[in-house]
Amino acid sequence: METKADLVAPCGIYCGICPVYIADKGNIESLKEGIAAAFSVSVGEVWCDGCRSGRVFLTDADCTVKPCVAAKGLAGCYECDEFPCHNIEGRLEPVRRAILRSVPALREVGIEGFPAHEEAHYRCPHCGCRLHMAARQCPDCQSAVELD
Ligand SMILES: [Zn+2]
Image (cartoon, rainbow, N blue to C red; front, side, top):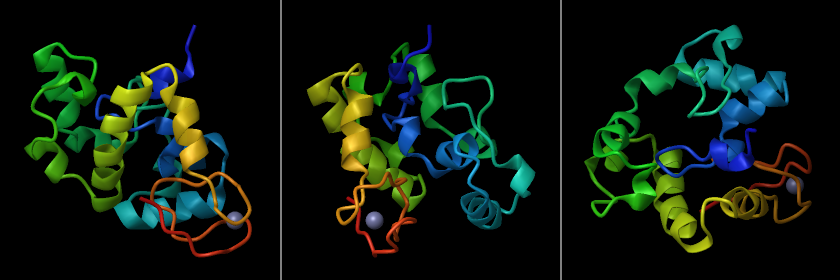
């Protein structure tokens, strides 16, 4: 059976905080449109079942973390002595920031507890609604948010 721990990507990011995953699973059209514009793809191409699934967003083709982790026989960067390496430095800024925060947290709380940890972390400080890792504004109360 698939658990939320299966949604922890090799780089350490929990897919439940990714805007692509959230837009697809919540069918949030405005978020899909923003992502489509940012990545120069069509709205219909904004889908993802999670980084470890067989149906991953198109940027997966550029991911250097997944092949590195596979070659080392590790479940993820959180098991790697070389973290953080050049594979992390090349990521998009919100992704890089999320990885640098996620891996130490993942090592601390463990993979089973990590999804709940992340769902609690990515909340609007004003209204408590769920946010994705690149959010600058709460979609619910419209407050400006600053995520680390
Ligand atoms: Zn809010």
